[in-house]
Each structure stands twice: as C-alpha cells, then as structure tokens.
Length: 552
Image 1 (cartoon, one colour):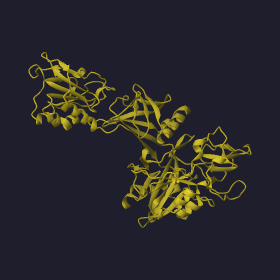
Image 2 (tube, rainbow, N blue to C red):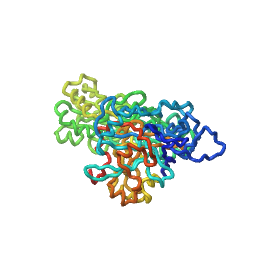
Image 3 (cartoon, one colour):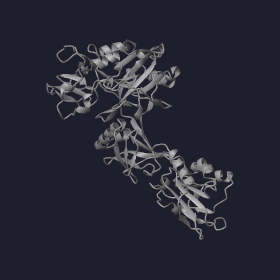
Image 4 (cartoon, rainbow, N blue to C red):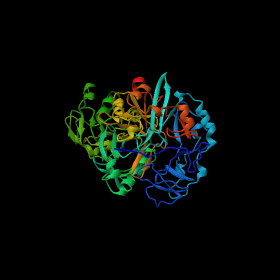
C-alpha cells in the first residue's frame, strides 16, 4: 500500500488575502482534531501524523511550515531543463530553505523564496514545452486522493499532445538495492546489515563481479521497533540523496556507501571491479601469456583458473605443468572453493597465493618452470620459478608478463556503489491521475504511459501493480524526503498522450498548459506564480524524459 500526503492547495492566507508576489506553496488549513489546539498553531494535513505546527516552525518532516499563520510547502518545485544552464542562471535561482530548518528551531520566514528569483524564472518562461519538464520534487501530493494530482500538465512533444501527471508519493513499501563492485567478501548471504546498530537490510545474492545488498523495506520501516523504523527511514533518505552512509554486516565487513562513488570496505576505498572470474581471465589473456609463461593461476573466490589445464591452454598446445591446486575441480582448468571468502587475493582469505598450491607432479614439472599467479583485478600478482626440488621461488617478473598484469587492471572498470530505488506506486496514489486506478496500471503495462522519477527513467517490473526501479544517481539531488509515519517521499511522474489520458478516465478538468502552471502554481492553487527552481537534465537521461516508449 502506498500512502499519500493529505494536502489541500490554496493561495489564500489566514486573513483571506491573496498573495501578490511569488512565494512558497500555500495550503488551506484543515479543521483541527482537537479544540484544545493553541490558537497560534496550524494542523498540517500533509500526512497521517497531522502535526500541530507553531508559528515560525516546521513540522516533523521539515517539508511544511507555519509562516505567519499560513501552512506552506517550503521547497520550490523542481523543473528539468533540456539545455545546460550557465552558472548563476536558473540552476541556483532559488535555494530551498528546508535544509536550513529544524523542527525544534524557529523558522526564519525571511529565508523563504521571494520574487528575487524572477529573472531566472523569466528565463524558464521563455522556454518552449519541449525544453522544460516539471518533476515531482517539491510538488507535494493531494489527499484524499480522489482529488487530482498537484500538477497535471499538458504539453506538445514532437507535435503530439501530451499530459504529465506529477506528484510526490509517500512510499511505505519501498527499498534500495545496492550493487557494490568488488570481489571482497562483505558478509555471508542473508546476513543482517546494520546502520547505527539497527537491522536495516540483508546481504543478497552476489552478481558477476559485484556484491549485492537489499536495504530498507516495509518490514524494517514499520514491522520492528520505533527506533528501527526511524533509523531505516533516515538511512534510506540519506542513501537516496547520494549521501555517504555507514553500515556493518554481521560476520562481515564495515562499509561506507554513497551512490556513484567507490565503496569503502573496512576503511579501504575500492578501486577496481574484476575483469571476470578466474576462468574468464584465462580465456581473455591466454594468447598474450603464450610463450612467456609455463603456467598461470588466476586466483578467484568463485572459479580459479589454471592455464595449462584450461581449454584455452590446450587450444594453444601448452603442456600440462603438473601443478596441483586445492579445491573442488569443476571442469578442466576450473576450480571451486580453493579458499574461504575474504578480502585477500581474488576475494579469498589468502594473502600468500602459494597457500592454494598442493605441489607439483614430478613426472610433468621441471626445474626452471615459470609460473604467474595473479588475481582477477591484477591488484595482486607474483612471479615464481621452480628450483631443482620443484619448489616455487619468488623471482623478478619479466616486463612482457608485467604488461599483461597491467592490462588486466586496465580492463577492470572502476569500482562503484550503485543505488537503485524500488517502490510500489499502488494504493491510492493512482487516484490522483484517474478515477479508475486499474486503468492507469494497465496503460503502463501496455507502454502507453511512461514513468519517471524526478525526470529519470524508471523500470516498471512485470506482473501486478506498479513496481518501479530507478537509479538514484540519475535523479536530481535532494529528491527524497521522509514523513515520520515512517515512510519515504519520492517524486513520480506519469506521462502519456492526451487521448490515452482521456481513455483511462483522467482528470481532464485539471489539465493545464505549462505556461498556466508557471503562472498559477499547482492544480488547486489560484493566484501567485509558481515558485520553482530549474536544473539541467542528467546527461545520461533521455530527452524528453516524458515520451512513452511507443513514441520514443
């Protein structure tokens, strides 16, 4: 189930006067739950918590404030620009004051956006429909959700009439999947992941060259203690907003994770993602080693490769070196379980590669044989030559071999932490788009509707419901917020052709052109021009971000 903020937009202040200058979104006051509420307080109806906010202060989420008796949404709405904006233009036209506020400190109303951003907004006003895209960041929501979404914007893309439904969703059912590019052992599968001592997720199945974590989710948000829910919610907001977050894994490593940055494992910043498993590395570089080595062992926690046994060595006509490797033999030249998982060579727990060598068959090996042992990233490498007793001795690595080790490193991609937000856009969120929510779900599955999060492309999972997944690195900074239910606030936009929106029973009376939205604010607002800020689109995101696949 997806919860929503309960927001009634309106431009009138408490005294009934209409604002005449640009300002934050003003919301109508709701009837208080208690007649005993102080006269200088406003009950915020933006979520089920129903904070009673004193004058000059913010609610528990820091998203709404009582400014001189007016309930306001303190963040400006974020627009994405097709063009790269110059420094000092609309990119930084309006600073969102939410980051400067604290629910326990008086709110300085002088820091609210004012008409000082008009020049930057004028720049945006002169742009055409296909040069601006309104996102859900700062858009707020409507509740009860039979009301239209805050923004239902018409535009023309490539000559086609389009509609974009924009809102901030409050997600109880949501999580983050974190891909960590490293061979290091982070912890056993299913091990608990902790943040500030609270369990906030678990280690899940590893993927090729990467370890995977599942973090957050409804059971940690609402199914445990209050502290677990608060810590989980704060962790998810920070992770989604590309801040660094520290974790510990039961029976494993300490981690610092930040979206789009190299992970830090036990205090060491990771550098490389492996080029492949040990067997794949043999296959890639066998020909480059041929003639320079008599044997190569590529140490890997998953599949350790031995060149002369491997099919690649056989195809090159290499002779069996007689080397015996510990572990469970899979197919020729491929060995499982040569050591325990760890942070040493190739993601194993060894520091001395000879620890996985049982010895040499005297009928095949000979003194002077040249042996390279290397990891799957090239970070570890050692050159050996056999003495008269067939004991490997460390020797100087030939330049030709050293170049192949360097090439392994060259072919390794940089180690990154990738953070993917997964949320269920179900419940009553869809009613802000249509009176018959299942029609929106069906239209999305039929690829008649494109789903974005802050303008970033979202993958919609197959099966029932609207389960979306998006790379937070491609979303605008500060896209995520929280409410103390606890739940995560995230932007979501649904874009479709006008006739598709009509056919799914959309709120056609609430559709407004972009120019009118800029002049009058959200759907339920009349009066002051929309307070907004504009940022350039992420270079990896398509433009326009709103065109359904069938029109792309």
